[in-house]
Image (cartoon, rainbow, N blue to C red; front, side, top):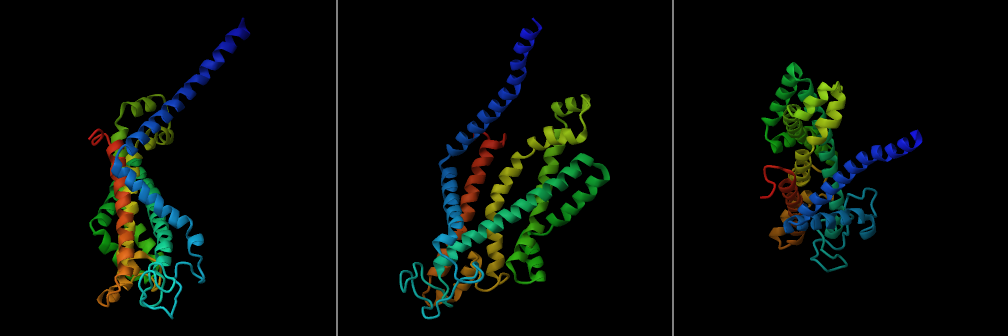
Length: 310
């Protein structure tokens, strides 16, 4: 009889974790359906997918023949040719740089910029905001005063000052934007954790004797990630816009396949009727920013309780 009782009890203990996992996957499928029900969000994902394919297959689409793939190769015998001529699909710039090559590798560079800046600032800002909210007291006051100082300076002005101080370099643009963007994540995480700490399930976890680390890891942080996901998605487009602005004013190396630098290089050609360089690179910047904003808005409508069902 003892063996029979144990054999019947074993499946019951395994049902709970399986049921919890099934509920999580069901919720995720429901969120995915809600997200893709919005046609504008689908358009945003389609544009992002197109750019991701460009970045992933850049070495196959346009094989680089220079030591640095992010430096556009020069065709000095065909300078400023319009699209479709002399074997250049989208024409060349005033120094013989192939515009099509620049757009392809520019997507690779923009993806690198967005992922690096947003990834670093998301992690660092989450750490700072979590420490401030969980520890509280003087630590919270000190960290938030530092955040307030950073937030008091406009993002573009701050990034411009850092990039100009460090010198023209794409790596310096990444560093400058990372310094600027982390504070918003710290502020968001702190506010969410302070709100969640007042929830009943967190109080119940304290009563059961759970450690602060376990409460943070299991109950607090997982419930604070929703606004971070939305903000990170929106920033993927904003980062490229600001990076293009810094490159446009000359804070990237000349000849770099960065869309902002290409727009800047095409200014002089506009007066001579060479519209293609600024037009194609500018359109790429607009589409990149628009796509991530459409996706970010769609995610916010689904994940944010304040806008859910709007």
